[in-house]
Length: 251
Ligand code: PGA
Image 1: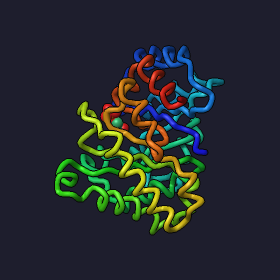
Image 2: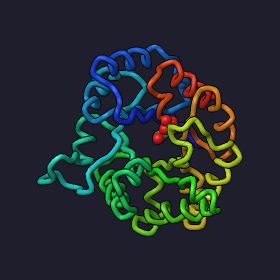
Image 3: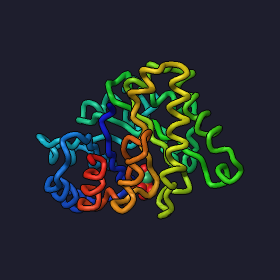
Image 4: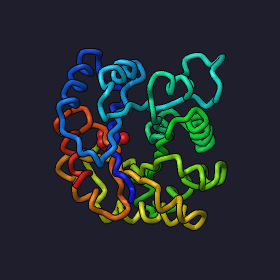
């Protein structure tokens, strides 16, 4: 039995004031006990979120970490161990905005995945195809390649301490959502890919769907057998909407 996870990716949004308001709203939401909820604020708001969510069942994660495992001379970066020290429990790695806008290659994503695990953080490995790749029938191949980069470097066992997020790039922030059937097909393929190496790890691996998840479509997505929750961007900036998505994951 996999515990559903709903992750709120706030991306590059918020001020101290708006974050305080959002956190206050989240504290008032009813979150089902069976659902794990983690929010991923901008780095500058991580400490605020950790302190304002202290004692609550909502965890805090970061949106990225440095490739280096040890702290040291790397201007502008933040090491996974520093994130851990600041109170983070998870970190996103390989989000498509970083892969596509900032040119992060699979090799970089793998370094960050390793750095996260070394520091005791749970990496949320994000994978997904572009619209062009989907339209040319390459979806499963592209996603398999992104997952294989980590499997080849770290082994299937590394996924025992990780979360996967399938996020079709064409569905992120566009209002277009993969249909439950389209998402399920990819999720099942990812699980099968891991199962060929380790069935136990595959069976326990949480695979989140991301891409325009909202309260109105969450339930039908989460009803799919291989969808274990969501990575929510835009809708996570509204406490009521995000709370409703978390409740949908509990049903
Ligand atoms: P979205 O973003 O929910 O705004 O589409 C999801 C994500 O990029 O994680």
